[in-house]
Image (cartoon, rainbow, N blue to C red; front, side):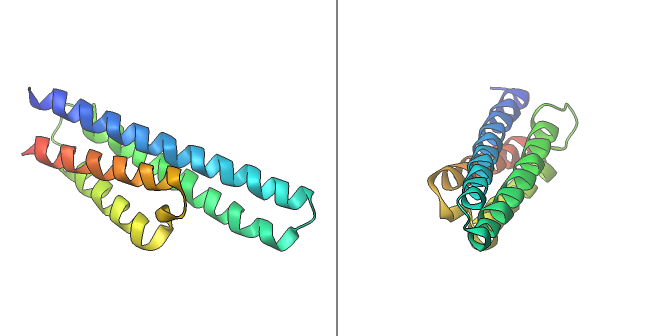
Amino acid sequence: MPGTGDRAIGAAFGLVGALLLVLDGLIDLVRGVVYLATERGLRAFGPFDQALIFIVVGGVVAFFSVLGGFRRDDRGLVAGAVLVVVALAGWLVLGFGSGVLALLASIFILIAGVVLLVSSR
C-alpha cells in the first residue's frame, strides 16, 4: 500500500477519535445543563470544564489528522508525533480515562499517531 493510503487510514482513525472526543464533550455539556436546571449549581462546573477541554482537544486532533493524512507534503511525521503526545497527555493529564467514549477516542488517536509516524518514514 502506498504512503498516501496509509496516511489516509491514519487520518480516518484520527477523525474518528476526534469525533468520539467531541461527542463525549457534548454529552458532558448536556449533563452540565441538566445539573444547572435541577439546581445543582456547583456540580455543573465540572462537566462544563471537561466539555470545553474535550471539544477543544477534539478540534486540535481533527486538524492534525487532516493535516497529516490528506496533505501530500511530509507533514505526517509532525502530525503523528502531535497525535501520540495528545493521546498520552490525555491519559495522564486531561482525563481521557474518565469515560468510555474518551478512552476509545484516546485509543483511536494513539493508533492514528502511530500510523502517521510509521507511514511518514
